[in-house]
Length: 372
Image (cartoon, rainbow, N blue to C red; front, side, top):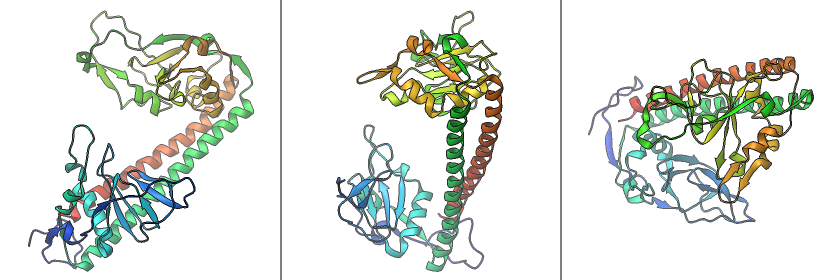
């Protein structure tokens, strides 16, 4: 016998027991299915459905654990007929499946991952894992509560996805309607500059804030809560990012990821990583920087910039040609009007993300408190 969880339904009071997972689910194994071009059955890998296969190896609810790589320890549960690849472990604990699924989330399987090269979790490690549990009716109540919370989280994600689809479609539609009013180029809008130069590994980690490559790549407006730091000496000459600057990624392993843009709308002077470049927007009569944050993420702009990515194994933006190339913008008044519309939806998305974060925090709290 062992202790009881910190948080319980009031009708339960008995102590919990424990056993190894192999006595609940004795046949933990890796998948063996492979993708086929003419398959009709979902094929699961370590991150979800990755393709189709010909036959369903599993026709009932199973728990899936990513076995190898960066996703090792990631959990899924599925009830549909499916195949499973060999980089994923399968747990079939019958009526225990949902409890095991949530218990393993509580346990955090990253604790088991080993290997400095390819992170790995083995079936034998899972079999030896100690599972602590109460009586069946208590387990079912815990599972039902967490299932309801997962459903609400899934709904919240759908709300966010729909709003993001709305803003993308509206952004493209408004540009198509008003985007032919000004002909210009980035070289006419301002002056370009490079990111950090002359820095060594020891210079990073302390000092002054700089905008990372990932910050530019992931956000159409720079996230001011996601800076890293670099040592800048007094009098050292480095380019400084100012309010309204448009930033672009310079290189990537795929051409689609070259020239991804972001706009800095912060008040503080910051620096820029060496794999990006910036443009100081000086011609305020032609361009409204907040609007440019939506323009550089629009489908027409992505199609425009794509041909400027050059290379074979690694692609680089042909910066000089890109800056001189003609671009079309709405009038300044329409830029401001479009920005106001799209920013209203962006603010709604941020509100919904905060709600999602609260549900996620609530779930993590319950996982910590309702299990041992």
